[in-house]
Amino acid sequence: MSAEKIDLLNFLQAHPPFDQLPQQALEQAASNMDVAYYKAGSQIVELGQLLDTWHVIRSGSVEVYRRSGELYNRLSEGGYFGEVSLLQNRPSRFPVIALEDCLIYLLPKAVFSELFDSYEYFSDVVEVEDRSRLRHSVSQREDANQLMTASVKVLLTPNVLSITETATAHQAAIKMSENGISCLLITDLQSQICGIVTNTDLRDRLLTPGLALDTPVNQIMSPRVFSVEHNQQVFEAMLLMLRHNVHHLPVLKQGSAIGIITLPDIIRYETQNSLFVVSSIFKAQTLDELVSLKADVRACFVRMVREDANSRMIGGAMAVIGRSFKQRLLELGEAQLGPAPVEYCFVAMGSMAREEQLIVTDQDNAFIFDDNYQPSLHGEYFAQLGKFVCDGLAACGYSYCTGEIMASNPKWRQPLKVWQQYFSQWIDQPTPEFLLNAAIFFDLQPVYGKSGLVKQLNQLIRYKAKANSRFLACMARNAILRTPPLGFFREFVMEKDGKQSNSINIKRRGTAPLVDMIRVHALAIGSKAHNSFERLDDIIESKLLPNGRAEDLRDALELISIVRIKYQAQDLELENEPDNNIEPEALSAFERKNLKDAFQIVSDAQKFLRFKYQPGRAS
Image (cartoon, rainbow, N blue to C red):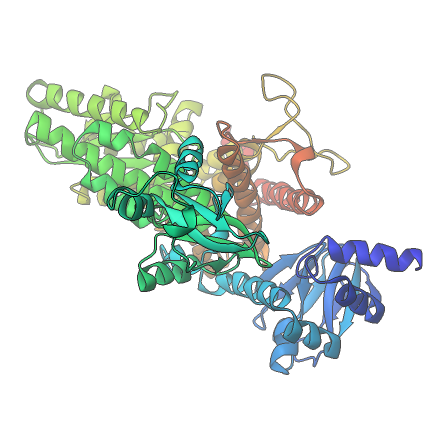
């Protein structure tokens, strides 16, 4: 066998959907594969092209587009494309362009179809991968029910224990107790699964009838074992449990049990849905009950990342959860202190107001009172309420703001007329301190109470900021202070001091400069939007930026955000405290290349900001 063929076989064995095919099928695929080279930027598949081969990426990366020209997917080594066209025998609806120099393996349509029809694992993986791509087309659905799309693999308890049918019920009970499990698979002399015994079986079939402890386990087991394949959906597993009234399902892969899922696993998984978390927040009757939900919030975050939600979905869901904590704490605070003496609005700033909140976040909040507020009469009540809410948020995982921009600070508990004075002064006299406040408070959203108070402030901001070129120049100057971490030769420039040396703070050097720049443009056009992606939609419509620049900013924000999100989720899964720092060596080659491209967009956008608003005139 030639070295080239050995290399090809090794590659196929390492990548799904080939990784579990028998040797004969692998050799069939390898013998029929051709290889093609495409230079970066070249067209691999054209819109409307009728394909006669399936494409598998050996090296490099590609971008897949919709017919509208909108980016649909990015694929790198091991990725594949063209299966929809082949399976439906229709011209391709998704043009593909080489993002970098690529080697592509080409598998003839006839061989692809034979593998698809002959091997269930191969077809399952291809179809599941296609479904995961299609998630992009329905990503606008808010809080989609992940139960309908998740694979049972996300629930898998890998601790699969068994005992032979000749063992006694007592031995089975001991093994279950020692391992803290609620069931055991029973195997015959050929090590094939022939039954299952559960805690319920031990109670109802052994103890209740008064049988001896040395009764063979095969006399009390359930001989009919229902199971699911590893790539089936959680929803299918739940239906199977309900249909047959069973609470334990072995999970099989190529006929062997690789884990067990239980009904409590499904219930616990569904509690990680963002809608369920929000519902639990509003059902909480005490601060302790709210604090106990911290783990559910983190699990919800990890779940959304694991199931390929985009940054806008994740940021929006986490912001809704954070707002819910604030609302419930205010309700509990009023129940404890009594009704508020004057009308007020509790407001959120920063990432929560923009609906871009992640798992690593602090609290930025404030009180706006009706102008009937009198400090001597009402100040003590709101001081206590502000402290109750801020302390409660800290206990629930939302750190205190190091700059004390919180409702517990009397400076940020003011009537509307004082807030109007604050904002007017910040815009008219843009000192460094006032600009810092502007960058935080100009993302302002009501959370609880009289929202009309916030509406008046937002109207003031839009009116005054748009008309003040000096203020915009000052905001632009601040927005270019934090530069992306790229050196002269596009190598990463890392932090060199503190405990996070030799890493990149991807928020401070990536998402934050982007958010700041987008905010300046949004203020310049009088946009009413708060979310950065929605602001970019307004900026595109206004034609403020040259063609394609706003779309580039959107792509860069999504890419940098999703990398930040991914590594926070990874920290949580490893039981490490998440942060905003990443080490370049932890990134895949695909992530490194695309992050550099995204950071280059940030750098170019800062240059344009300097040209557009001439921040030099702000001094």
